[in-house]
Image (cartoon, rainbow, N blue to C red; front, side):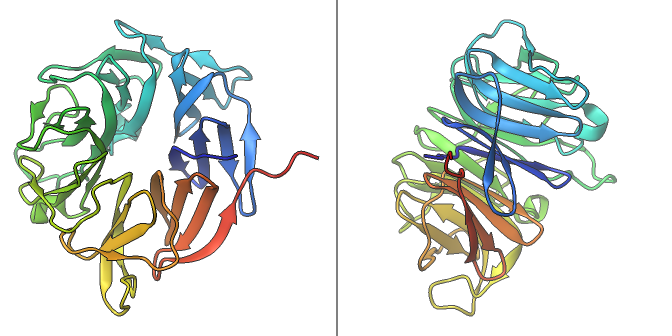
Amino acid sequence: MSIILSLSEHEGSIWAAGPYGLFAVGEEELTPTPQPQERLTAACSLGDRIFTGGAPFGVAYLLDSAEQWQAAWQEGADSAVLTFASAPDYDDSGVILAGSEGDGVLRSRDRGLRWMPSNFGLRNLTVLTLAWAPPMDEDTWPHWQVVFAGTEEGIYRSPNAGLGWKRSESADAAYQTVAVAPDVHCSGLVLAGTEAGGLWRSTDGGRSFDTVEKAPEQVNALLALANGSEGASAGGGSSAGWLLSDDTQLWCSQDGAAWSPVEGSTPALCMLEIDGRVYIGGENGVTVLNSANLQVERLLQIPPIS
């Protein structure tokens, strides 16, 4: 088995993580990599280090210059980490956020060596997903650094890089995935998917969300495509700027409101777009799609043990 719950990329290195371990994603297969978590839920590759989230260590990290994994310092938090999201300006700020199983949002400003809860305004401390908005133009004022958190009961929006949170206007539900449009500061588009309450769509930058009619009830993964993809809808010939996965297949949409099934697709638990390809993590490893037409290029799995 090679169930994948998390995908991460930095400078050409792609990592996949799930309950069966941490894997380097290659051209032909997934290569197992030793890591210290007994229950692995997420991985994040950044610069000269890779992080794993789970239990018993919450956050563990490995530096390129080191041979052994280290447990990161977590002040006032000891629950498992479920998701990571690095700030768009990570190279300068060193800020990374992590969503935890019971201690809310953990925030690091020293490139992941030390983490502290950052929960001002949060009413639920089980954080299932995190998603940053792209940076605002440098001459825009006020210059917000917007990030979203999906919890077991609602969606939260932070304008100040995760230092404080305000609940968005949305239904009470478990929001397990959030995706932000590349042009969100103009279009205001943000999508949020729930475990059993359907898809929700915002046109005001994530301040309020409305339900999307005729969308799947279970939304396991969402992706905002960087440049859209041509001919991705069921009928072909139209463009898709968004991908969604329920428990049976992928769906595509141009505007996040009207959705069409992607023929021949398999369901995803996580998705990542890199250089014209969409990497789909699911129950059978990693499937690589061409983002121009959403056709399968290859399937990557753990090689059999000889």
